[in-house]
Image (cartoon, rainbow over the protein chains, first blue to last red):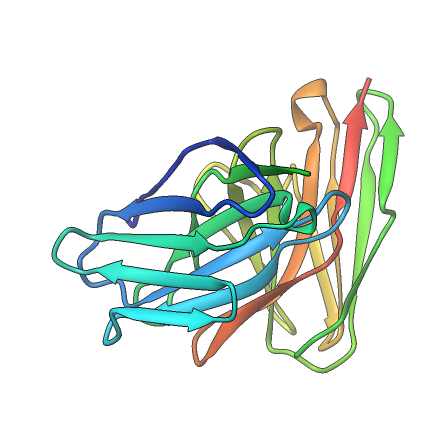
Length: 111
Length: 115
């Protein structure tokens, strides 16, 4: 089955800096790649996603890039703010199967 | 979108006992999913709960340990049976994220501590 690796496990940045989280996947047939944000005491919430027919997608300060050849995708957060502090999970999905999640990245944005 | 209410939000339980977690969705859904999130780990799918049939369990999870009920299209329960400290985790209910429904929605989770 699919295997998703996520790095780094923790990331500390200063407010206003950019943050990048990277994920690799194993099954080249995977075609859907979402990113979830989990705040303390809450369930994960979708923040952005990308499909395999697109190389990049942007939504305000958040962007995701996909390199199908290398089988990796990345989350980019620009102009980070303290409220961006959370755990971020990447995931991959093959066809109509269930999502396979990475182990998560704890992002800490210091004011 | 879907709004999922999960309870209890947290509990501390004695080893050997059982805890039933409830999940209520604000709309009818065919499939509901139960995940386990161990400290510092990813979300691991326990089982898929379909209304009117037995739940489908993932490798490493068995019905005797994690019995699931799905009495209707908006509600499900997960029981963690004969608990041990290794069962201390966050348990999450989810809908979507499979088939034609790409986005997964999650409840706020149940933080279980077994002492």
